[in-house]
Image 1 (cartoon, rainbow, N blue to C red):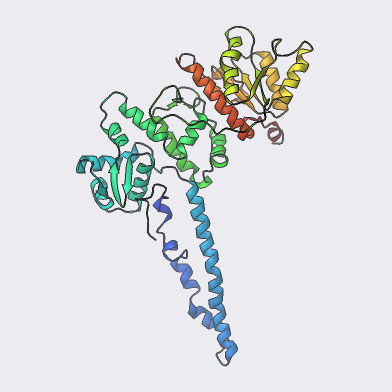
Image 2: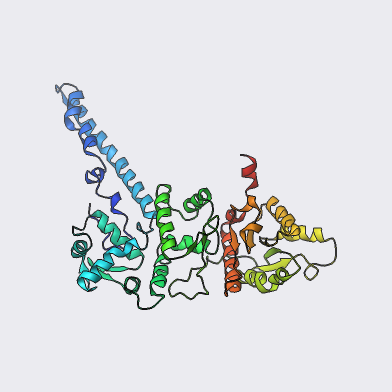
Length: 409
């Protein structure tokens, strides 16, 4: 079977191709010999009349029926593989071939065969072509009619001419890589979930095949470290947000797609009213909610009419499409309102300035952690809340506390 991973940017890893089974049309050599014509002739009636000839033909017909099933299995396998479009190499490992072309051929366009000689001293085998595919997905190589050309991004990383060339190039590469970019964009500025929940999210939300998840995690973890996009100083790894405010060229994480909501759809904010946290409603939460095209509501005298405050809180939570909870300071009123929201199975965006203020039994749920020492923290928090609101509208199960499932365990 011809492998095109050296010229196709979306090519699949060659480890899925060229096996003995596929060389034989999806059937191994052992399989093909098990149903050979001599076996069936031995089982047929003695050749004394026409029925004997028909009996001899039946096994051949049987073999014809098996072929579509085998082909269907190959097609299903190929369809599954196509979902796993992430690079099979971590970002720095994918620089080997571009570096070899730059060092040994002055970065000029190079045939796949010559590039293999430069990089490995051997031929352009399956593993080499998989590595080419990874380099292309990071934007390190471009291919045209079997000719590979190193790109400026690879040059800036390998031979930087300014202090930030290398790290910016690595970040651009990571945030251009399929699957890796989507996962980073989803969790940027947040702690990564526990491995069990992360694995489930990769399978269910990002459609990475179950059999490829461990491979993806290895590539993702190493690439995040290389691009300095992960903070591992705490109990859990946290993805650093280099979103809209750091202005890294090419490294702006895309916001989730807009979700259509009816006019007047509300987002209820649960937050302390006193101190500096009380100012966040006008400065942070309301702009974020309006950016997501919802109407912001909170339970205070400026918003609700006179009456029983808990009745107002209950109605506000009940009628809200999504909610935001500021957990900083462990305010008891906020935690009480959060309990009501979880009992109603409402999607809630959790926000805190530190992980210690997030209740232990909620730390498996996505929480936006912000750092006030970051000069851009305010705008980053607004953007991130808006992104998570859109995400909760399109995938509400991510932001819902699954108490029924836990109660049935």
